[in-house]
Length: 190
Image (cartoon, rainbow, N blue to C red):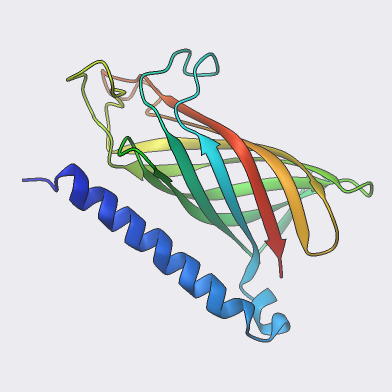
């Protein structure tokens, strides 16, 4: 028997809070040691299940609080840098929340403008099948995660960006309504 909605959301909230505490305590550590494993953290406020984008329509509501860690190991590729990332979004009204991981390719221009795109996977606490018309039928507990970000580096340490992400099962399951989020994020680089 699976966990109920409150238990799943609580687990995701605890994981995000734990990640936040780890990052917060690490901010006070020696920055050279931090740079050895953590490159940047990003905090965001996102519109949940935005309609009219990749998924096409909206069923769910609320705002998502997003936290993401981008790690230091990297590889140069096509003028940008690929790095691993781990993050999550918690929905404020009890709709679908998620944890995700993947790789990010980011290109930064000398002007401070940057853009990134990624590919990875996510787990979520949303519905798998359509039970009511107020929740998305995502079809599978594990989904693909595709983020896109465009922003501006304010200085060597901080940035502001517009962030979009899409999750779906790419039709590996019968139900595949997909979900999009859109919003803004603040980044702090170590």
